[in-house]
Length: 88
Image 1 (cartoon, rainbow, N blue to C red):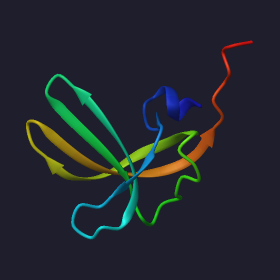
Image 2: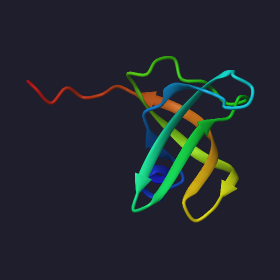
Image 3: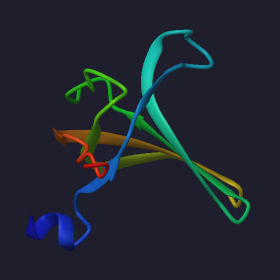
Image 4: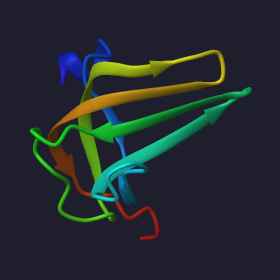
């Protein structure tokens, strides 16, 4: 948990997407903030998500694209944790 607090491992919920050039399926999630779009894509050599319903720990790997308005970053998954149901 110390690595999570220090920012080495982050949390994200990935969905299935399509690679724009190859057409292959990939796991990704996108953040949008003040004109900057950051797309995180799970590296194909990393552990892969098993479902879109879970939140996963990930670490950032190589940045493939870095412009003023768009960033594309490969990520590596660690583990997932279950969502806590707040409606008890």
